[in-house]
Image (tube, rainbow, N blue to C red; front, side, top):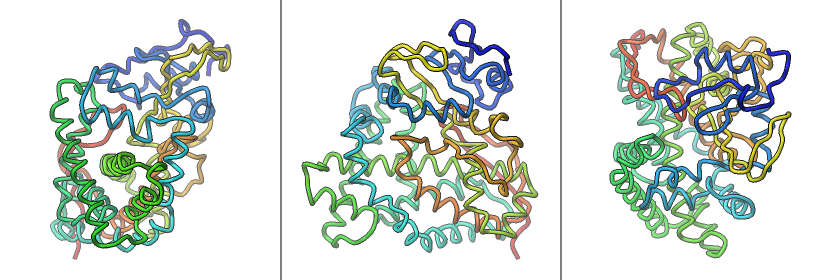
Length: 404
């Protein structure tokens, strides 16, 4: 640690997050974290230590920052319009209203009811490759599983998973640096996704509302359209689909990477499946798919001696915070250790609304995988998204001891 705190941008370490080769887990980030609680970047400042991320992620002087992404890319069309309207881009009373109305749909009791469904899906997928002793983990497990969970939430046939997954991938291009050049493809996927949302709502109304995820959202809309309009209902469903597929697919595969590299931990989980809940938290601390969250300063203010001007972009590096050696004495991967909270689901006003669902479906998947897939190891090259922003493997071939 540096003895004299850095309080000016000029003195702070520099991280070139715009470089496609930049890695959130690099030595460069670790060295910057040892020097200072923040670093300069081409897009504002990066906060890289646990205590400061923990404070600023909840700071009322900062707003959710990624709302400006479409404008930054001069993007137009249905994706940009949805992105600006949706829950994540709202602030204050508007944001609180939408969250309050959506909360019942994401409640823990609904997730508990889905546990047998999650287990059935996971087991069916594992059945397809367990005896052959190998699989391409993303294509054969994490992507179909994450997407089938969304199908279950929306009351769509499980067989629709591949179409939804393709649309989610195409929409996801909007989060990359090629947003503008992929704009037509992104907007087409967004329009089709809205078609799915509208069809799911119509189908539900014909068959009658229940106590499920989608029914809860539709009830909020039907009870008071001034509180949750039709447009806001569809926007919320798209957020659930888009947010749920991408992140869970990546997070499960990042978990498998950690377990391949820590074989004794996988063996331990297989013998003690009740550790699966802790395993989800540990994976998200060490290897979150959302490697940083973005905020924007709403006013000029001073934090720990650093002047932060209104409009400054502030990146909160969840991965660097989650492995900060000043807070985590042994920051290595260990599913048996009680840890401080991680930032994989964000925190504060914009804490991920779907975290109960994500925690529930990943817990069931990991518990069953560890019991049935013994001694997993990589079986060829793993292909990766860039190791910053939202990261994860594109392809992960693994082999293991065939199931008898």
